[in-house]
Length: 361
Image (cartoon, rainbow, N blue to C red; front, top):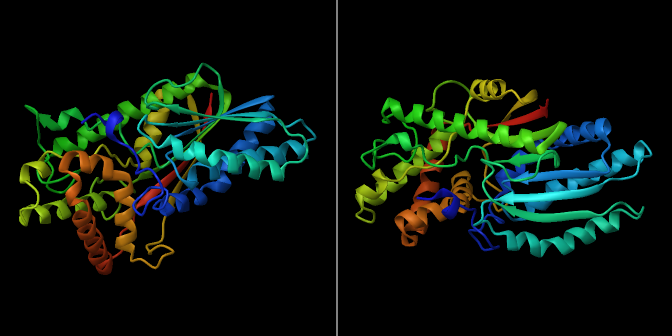
């Protein structure tokens, strides 16, 4: 399956859309908000550019997209007033894969602009916003055109399912959609290798696009130690595998369909991130924070499992529907939510994320 053509968050504003099921991502972003604003303020104070280039890589759609951009712009405006310096013009590049629902973002721009205009009556410089479709695993922008890069909940998605898990066109990871206890040893190594290739290419590409001293704030899912299987992010994929297996046992899905579905996801460890930053050599790792979310339902009083299932569906629906068909979606994610609730009653599920600040050398 061509990830770049198929993979996207569920668009629109419907019940299963990403716009209505991304509160967990918002919570993680909010946990890093102070770090993000501190990084952009430090950048501005040390460079004071007349035109500030900002990119949100993996911007998706929905309220989270423009919320962080508003926070970043206002932080720079406050800083410029404090040092009695003219506010720079802002060039904001919103990037995601071509299949992303950019139209929803564009429809929200008039209200976004009005909101900023009401809060800045000082003749501040203009703000230019554009959508830039394409994979961030490669070049997107001209040399030295960016000062600040932000990417939240995106870099754990790989550019592809690792080709090394296939032998003669068939996956060796039978019965699982990701790394599990039953996976052959080569599966975890294949995923690690793909992450290393992708993350290195990401860093190299951004190093050419960022100016000297430019900053990146990256938020991605991760894991606590060297073990690839734990009751963290990998456990959610294990429960998704079990959910599909239940549908196989009911005759609703062919077993071959389960055996041939693998997700393009990898949750790196702290050491793996630090190793790639050091080896690539273009950035200084200024900060790396471990973030843990509380295990609870969302504001609509849904159970933790139902909330997680809706979140995963909004993210994975495009890929699952393409592979398995749309008819099983409701049944699959109802089962998935129930399994999460059952497991969380036995003991906490503890997914972690990393908040990272990198500085261009």
